[in-house]
Image (tube, rainbow, N blue to C red; front, side, top):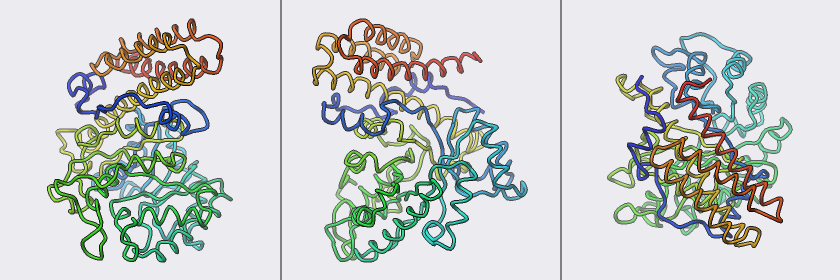
Length: 437
């Protein structure tokens, strides 16, 4: 298998391929919202994938099953997986306990699972699903099915079922979620100025679902697809039509930024826009970094902290040619690209944190300028493919914080803590690439 490591990815592809935002540093208010995503103001070292992306290796023709697939995913560096079924075809029968053993043996965590809407919301079916999720150690379980209804009343009825399922799931220590495609963003039949997604969110709120622990998983590509396909009202039943040139009718990141605690899982799915914005989900999936989605700008707006888990998905990965490593080759290249983008979003947030603390008067302006210089140099060096040099600038940043941030122990602690986590993350990557165990 041909491996494209992170240093080569950054050096060859450059900043444009990983979606460098042209916007300035976040303002204090926006930064504060991004930094308040989770209870702990620390970056999360999770990079996961939806197993549907490698489904042919688990249960397709010539499959190798869960054991070999998990081993390879762990070698690449993934540490979380989202299930799309629990069988492995002709490889042989496997129990839930055996799957859990394979997860543990490879250092993988089952972060969630896609089951049908009916299995999630039907009380006669979801007991078994919840019990299996608990046995696999999942904190979350959800559905990739669209919620029912194109009228306000029908959507509200489905939302009530969803909220009730969360109340039951909570007794198992679980949180449930719904994953979007483009259709959730169409306009409703009887309220043509309002999107189905908006009605669903409000209805789950009214039924107490969010308060009980339910949340949304945003498929970023399909959300942008909805923004292209259903940009403005019009068309059949007034459900929405594209704008000229396939322009977006909204920014998907705004949904998250408005309620960051309501989004925990993200499908970091990349893609290329279809010539006809109304075709399918408006995009054709691609490997991460090979499409047009500006993930760095997206996460710069919404944050990428402890309770935001990125999961790679590529619907067409099993069709990747053997010469390119098949689905696992796509997974490896996408992991490296995700790692690079995630690192840059963290560095963006570290810069935003410095700016916020200066604006709040907790760090002196001159000190802040010095610290921002170190972070910006780390960003430039990392964008240029020089991971070791970026590590050096982060070390300087930590030393400067330790010596120059005075009179605010909390500010000093959060700056040093976040920078150290990013530095350790990069050092582990550097050691791995250099063959250091």
